[in-house]
Image (tube, rainbow, N blue to C red):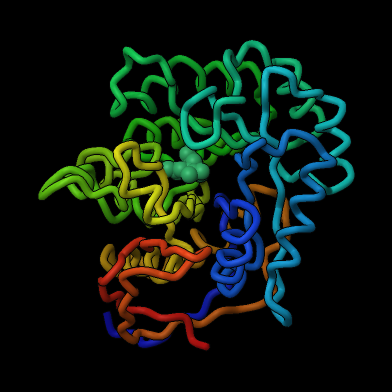
Length: 346
Ligand code: NCD
Ligand code: ZN
């Protein structure tokens, strides 16, 4: 490619994890320097299940935004079997909640309080459809007999099709998709169904986790799949289709929690997220679709204004550090030790 700079409307991150406390304070600035807004996942321990705790968490995040940086956290409500539809509708009306998150119980990190049976939250989904609140879905079944690599495809057949059929006006984001099955599903549905795609699922397949020794820093959920799926995701993300947009799923876990006999799922990609995505668009010869994916499709789906700020990236190499000091320990970022070709212009 010959272009040396690229300027786009300021992007947003439509799915990430900030955690809380000291880690939150240290990770929020990485996101806020790139993204104008972010959809913040509610899987704290205990999770954010009510308007009051959502508002309090938003306030804590705002204290971690560096002075002079414009950044808006968009909060999500963690759905449980006991979610009160009236509280959720109130939270949305008051501008606390932008979306609600469906975690099947025990699908991923801190999801033990998640929904045990989608049928149990049908009254909540009805209220969300009436109030026009976006539903974000972690689309994996959790039954122990279903192979971990098949859990997303199985979720589509068992749950996604019926949710979309039964709530035709509910806007649904299929979060962090990892399979060609999910791409095909999203493409086959109407405008009310979209998907986020992470940088890691565009860069790595399951070999990156399992070949040459266990690579815990490439382990996240949904787990990376085989190469054919990665190629389908790259095609979808770079296609220019308005149905796919940026959601990093940046999920910080300290090195000690990753390099453990029972290592946590999650990849911390916030420090070089935009650079990571841009590498994919350049490799695919699709720089002209980068702005739509990063900055336009998400706001349109969420019915929020596109940013009136811009951001410029320069084609200069940047080496990602091997580790980043964090909360008295360290964390290994995505692309650790690799060189990326683009850098956000300061
Ligand atoms: C996320 C986390 O650590 O909170 N982990 C991950 O692997 N993506 C949870 C999630 O989004 O599944
Ligand atoms: Zn996530």
